[in-house]
Length: 292
Image (cartoon, rainbow, N blue to C red):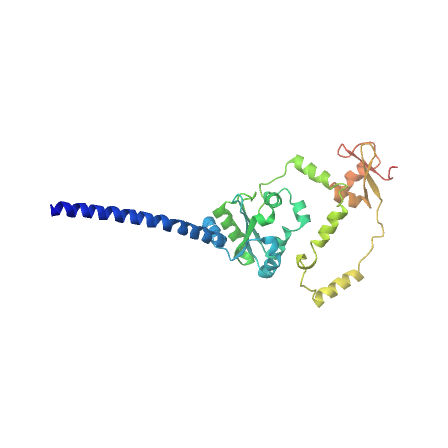
């Protein structure tokens, strides 16, 4: 009788202990989850580093607000950098002999326009530069720069890099259609007043690559001597004009040489089409007299 009562008592004790532990765990779990979320919030860079699999020497969470710090930290240093998109987790890997100059390019309107075909530039414009984290992965000697960049390209397989070999554009070619578009885009192109003002402001002060630098006395003397000995061209050349097929004025050139450089054509070709009824590239007339 006592044995039976002891067994029932033990069973009841076990049930009470079980429910006590269960209730305690329910009270404990939410604070632990909250603490974990809080840790994730205050240490975003450490979590990102663990996900990406590398440790960076410098991290800039909000690049546009940390431009001055980026300039000061990386002045006169060479190394490997990485743009990390916080929205889609895509990467871009790059290297630079002068990190400050290269990274500063990404903030420049002119650079964004000239390099608009690059995936990383399109992404920076689409998502905004503060949707990215800038990592300086490592500092390295100039001689080892391409070797280390190739290592990171192979290791991380960044989606924003269109070239898979460090410092090498071999095998990458623009289509003929793209070449024609790029040539035509530059004919008669001029920046708006607003754009010119923005470009000017973007290179004032710390944004200027020559900020904080001065010419040495040797450099000053060389510049002075070059200016004194500069020879003006006694034959400035013949002014020529580029028009559309309906003789609408497009652009003026001070000489055939200038037209040759701008239009990416040989001087003989320019002379061949000068004042002729044939259309240059099937679209333009080249004239020695400006049309009315």
